[in-house]
Every structure is written in structure tokens, then in C-alpha cells.
Image 1 (cartoon, one colour):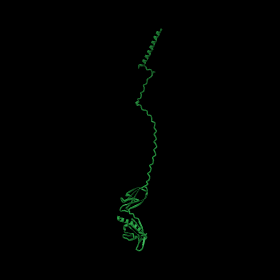
Image 2 (cartoon, rainbow, N blue to C red):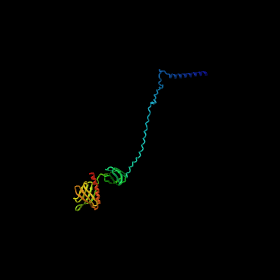
Image 3 (cartoon, rainbow, N blue to C red):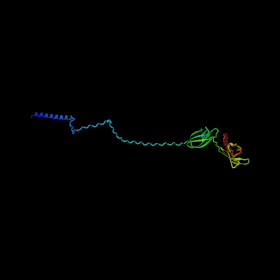
Image 4 (cartoon, one colour):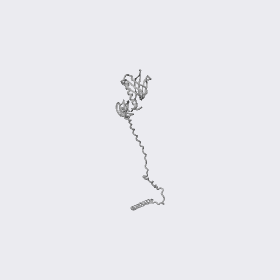
Length: 255
């Protein structure tokens, strides 16, 4: 064969092989349902549905427990200092007579009840006075701090005594005159001369300073003449003054 014939045959053969391959490919892709299935052909499985990201449950990562910070130690509380003890006194003075005048060491404080502040510690003389009453004084040992005092002007105070000699018509006897709020009494070893009488029962109670004589007459009883045993009338005179002042007050108040 010549070269041209060989070339033609070669081209025809190539065209036939290409048609056959093309026919097989197209016939396999359009296989009829009645055609028997090829068990060796791979079976395509449907893909599983993909979850919707909106329905996904977020993964919870356990939180690592945080260590709590320890509280700072409390600062120590300084103790409250105790107040310093007082160095002076505060005296509140009351009486049983309204508006009585109050004095401390002869210094006027005010009308009762009166309060004196910053009184220096130590012995102090407290005095109260009111018209119609004898002044009353009391010595107080003042210590620092508050203190209440009550001094009574209405209370009858009487504690007087004097050594005397009772003059008889014949002779005399010695003893002691004692005066208290309960009355006057003569204490002596001579039982016949001793007596006790209330101040209201003294009909006569008179002093003769120059004669050194105190005359006493008990209501419904005897009369007595006393003289100071010391020989001077001063003690007897002072005794009479103190007793007579209380006696007049008792008579006035009707006690």
C-alpha cells in the first residue's frame, strides 16, 4: 500500500475508536430503569442534614473558681481613754426653808437650793441663814466630785451645859445644868434638888450677870438660884442666852 492509503485507514480507525468511547459514556449516564443494576458500581449515600448554627447549644466551659481575696485584718481599735478624775468638788446645798441664803467659808453662794462648782477639796464651813431662824453651820470635809448637802433650819438644836452651884437658904450643892431640845435638867448628887422640865414649863428663866445668878422657876414647882461654879458669870450668861433663844422659839411655834 502506498503511503496515502495507510494514512486514510489510520484516520478512519481513530475516528471509530473515538465514537465508540463517546457512545459508551453517554449510554452509561442515561441508563434505563429496566437495565440491570451494576452491583459493582459505587452507591452514593445522602449527606446527613447539617445542624443549624442557631440551634447549637453553646458549650459551657466550667469556670475556674476564683480564690476570694482575704479581708485585710482590722486595725486595732484604740481603747477610749477614761476621763480624768475630778480635782474639785461640786456642792449642791438645800434647806427646809425656801430661799435661805447659802455661804461657803463665809462667801455668799446664792439662795437655796444653791450649787457651788470648783470647790477646792478640804474642810469647808457651809452656812445657811433665813429671817426668823438661827443660822446653821456645818463643817464638811470636801472631796473631789459631786455632793449634795441638806441643812435644816427648822430643826431645834440645843446642847448646852454649865457647871453650877445651887444656893440653898442654908448651904448649897453642886451639879450641872444641861439643856437640850427636850428641856432643861439639873444633874446633882442631891436627889432633892435635881429636876427635869420642858422648856415650855419654865415660868422664870432670868440671868443677873452682875450678881452671877440664874433664876429658874418651874411651873407648878420650885424656884432655883444658880451661880457659875467657876466664879465668873460668863459661862452662865452664855448658857442662858443659848437656852433662852430656843425657849422663845419653842413658845412661838407652840411646840
